[in-house]
Length: 322
Image 1 (tube, rainbow, N blue to C red):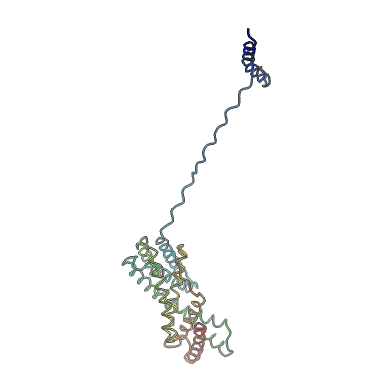
Image 2 (image 1 turned 180 degrees about the vertical axis):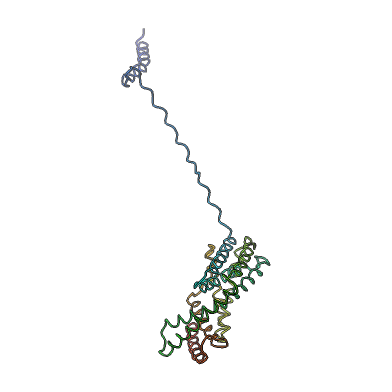
């Protein structure tokens, strides 16, 4: 046989024997079990199961109009609670309730005609209820005004004058509270009416509100505040100054409503300190009004209280204009 053929046959035999030899070598290296058999192969590794998110999806945010409705409803609810305060808390409750009712009306004004014809009825009814509580509030506000003045710096002759006026105002406040409890125990009639107004307010079509509605209301409110300020500065009349304060206060209440509804970017900006100063000036106007007919102050002291209040009011208005 030729040499090349012999070498080829040898290579074939060797290559055929190598797999068997390798299998034998591998078997020799694998450990044996006590019974002499090879241990079972490890189970195949399982693939990880996909993670399933079983949490509930986040609810979609409520429309802005419904958020404004929620704010107005909270104000009505707080007013209802405050009107139920009894005992010595009656006046503080009436004060808080009137603030809440004004805030609810300011929120209604943000919707304007988009809230339909029912809005005007609800707004008027809330306004009338608030006015019905004004005598109680004025009696308390007069005492608060005198307290604030007594905490400040006063001329030696002014302090005993205001202390006597404060005692007379506190007596008139107690009399007003007694009359209110006799006429409407627990203010139950007012609270019952307010529950009806709460339902009517919530029934308005708040979902229809669009950004142009409250933005237009804010723009109009800013313009009204500017015009009212110009009139008050020009005339110096108490009514014009009171109107300026009312317009500025409503703008502040609308800012509060928009921020509560998550619409702070559309909220008006203004000088809050000026609104506070306007409020203090209005308190002095209230003191002046109580120096006339039906005043709680002694007749001989009315003139002195009136002169003091007028001088303080002029200084307060100068600070505002400055």
